[in-house]
Image (cartoon, rainbow, N blue to C red; front, side, top):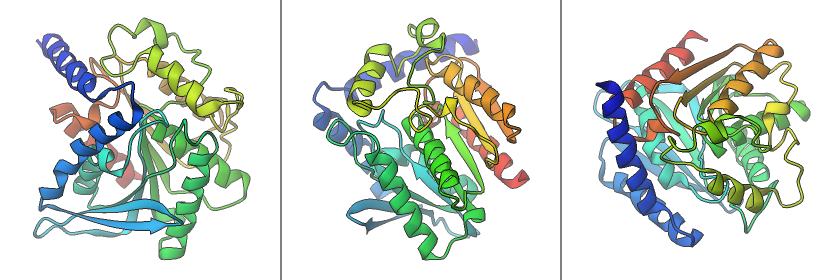
Length: 297
């Protein structure tokens, strides 16, 4: 019964995702923003825009009456979109859920996108806003990095950069279907392509061409699956078993364990790429697991 239901859901997701897709990147970005803008009328949340060195950022707070806010911790969120699309607005499908479940303030930012801005533009922007957050009042040990897809990649490579520069790293990382291997070596890129209602190899190859330019796909700053993770903070990974990035998550998990990093991987049966954005029971369960991971540290 669950398998049939998941197939129906994947069919719906594929149709909705198809409506948002466009060969014109500007149109696709606009469609995603329109979807995220629906949250403006949800009075349970407060959205506050700020600018950091011309980078648009957004604070998300769950302000429902009697909600006891977690004032100490914040979630530093990197949105997905293959480094070509995505924004604070589009990420609200997840950032609002994180804010509600954890009662933490969530901070999201619009890093520069490819092909207009190739690697390392997004990473430079992430470092810039990270320095802003540290200057604000928050301590690194109380900040949680989180991100989906390319945003999961950005969360990882930003942490690697902090480690390289001997800067303080965050408390932990929460990764939803992270893109970790730009060499696309995982078997799931092909074995799951007919199942995945969100991603396919045409999209991946286009994203690679737009983002990498002359950067080697084996660099750990674009493919963190090849990184040295010694001394890394704890990492929690969620992935669906019907998505082409399944092996990216599994290989990342194995690499983290190799370097004795405290890591957890949850594979959700019958689900798709960043299913946490969908209004389904599994998404609520996923957020429960995120909260459980954070509170156990």
